[in-house]
Image (tube, rainbow, N blue to C red):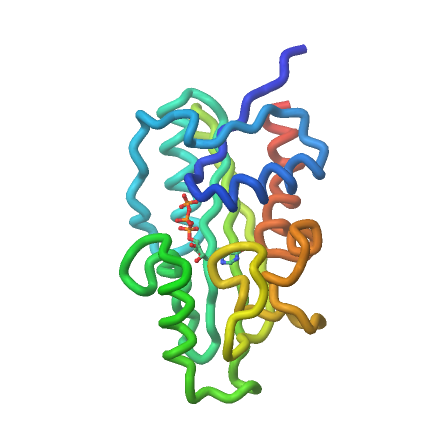
Length: 202
Ligand code: ITT
């Protein structure tokens, strides 16, 4: 039997690495290919207003363009005292998409006067699967924690250096990749999606 190919609808190389680890550990017998293998396919505008809507937009666009099953995630950091922001705007909070350091610095400045008991936040992830025939599934995961006042650690990406998961004394950027995947929003969401992928594409 030939191994099925599954396209990962992300150009974020950190996410590709995490998804390879997470889906690999879930025992999926599929060949995982990043969206970078299809440079001619344009990025889809993230016009949704929820993580789930955006994840489905990305997965459907790539499934239609490639004729292959596609998985996507949309994720971000939701800060309680900011009413859930940056949320779906996490990647472009400081203006330029993907400028992790500027996003993190702006958020820390905005929270400068907020004391520890009020610095609760969570990472959220919606993981979507879309098939070329329009079949879709979406599941969500969360990682709750507290925001530090200064970055610590150099692992991971994005807001990892300022989120300290509940029950730990380290930030996400101080965890090993395996430790982060075991508890992360993305790990939870894609571990929940893995049996669905197995059922739908074999
Ligand atoms: P794709 O759309 O190509 O997948 P992206 O980086 O634009 O890549 P999102 O639109 O989902 O992805 O934005 C996610 C942003 O949320 C990301 O840039 C980080 O700022 C933040 N984020 C998401 N997951 C994170 C994680 O595990 N650790 C730290 N920050 C994270």
